[in-house]
Amino acid sequence: MNTAGTFSESWLAQRERADHDARAMAPLHAASDWLATRGSHVPWQLLDLGSGSGANVRYLAPRLPGPQHWYLVDHDASLLGHAVARCQPLCDNAGAPIHVTTQQRDLHALESSWFTGIDLVTASALCDLVSADWVEALADACAAQRAAALITLSVDGEIRFQANDVAVNDAEDAWLFALLAAHQRRDKGLGPALGTTAPQALAEAFTARGFHLVDAPSPWHLTPAQCPLALSLIDGWADAAREQAPHERQRIERWWRHRREALERGHLDLYVGHRDLFAAPGPAHASR
Ligand SMILES: C[S@@+](CC[C@H](N)C(=O)[O-])C[C@H]1O[C@@H](n2cnc3c(N)ncnc32)[C@H](O)[C@@H]1O
Image (cartoon, rainbow, N blue to C red; front, side, top):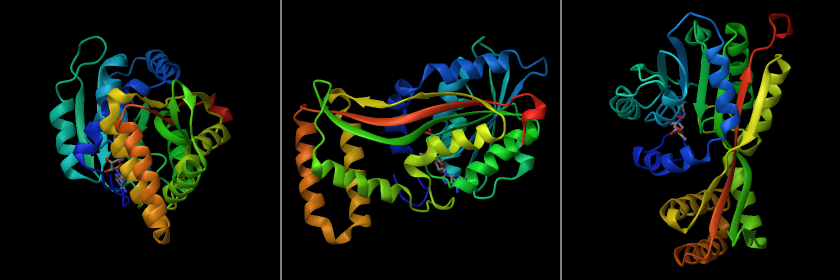
């Protein structure tokens, strides 16, 4: 994981299982129903923004109806290469092979032409990296095309260490998580990032354009069996905190050691909040 909008294949692979386990069912089912009732112009055209190595397509393709043509957009050619290799063999929920096209592009300026003919726009673990203006542009593009959107795994800022399902966060956790939240607001190449405010910004932008929303939590709940992912996370959070407060290295180091040891001993679970959102265009006259 890196703060400049670049992500390693190994990090994306490490989080894929937890991401898939976390997905909220209600937005997924709403997206599936919406596609199924959309009409007869199949295959569905699906645009996955910030697709990385294709984890979102691997989750969605077998769960969505009908013939599907996916367009995967990312600025990282290496990740797109992994995505093609691992998504080409996939089938839709009726067992028909999907089509996959990759487009190496910078998402900084969304172009309306990317959305032409698209039925459903998807993005996972992307929208906390983008700016409020970017979300407005996304909602505008979806409204203009009357495309729906399924935006998943946007962080909501809820982080808890838990023992026997009871939160055990202390003042040092609160301090560290505040540094992390500030770091998540830094520009990651797509404007000043929304960070933990992404779910609210998405809901407001689509609501303002007359979209109908289905929104639900999709948290990671990492048990001791998922300790390697939890350790990678807190290593990344400590790095972010050091960047955010370089004069507090010793205090950050104490927090990091304390929480790392407890996770390694199997004494803690880690809850990390996200939200999933499905947004469907309303009647044509309701769009802005
Ligand atoms: C957290 S990863 C999520 C990847 C994938 N959606 C998943 O769920 O595994 C964010 C993705 O956004 C891409 N990304 C970040 N900034 C970008 C930009 N300016 N243009 C295009 N892609 C970008 C990264 O390369 C990365 O693949």
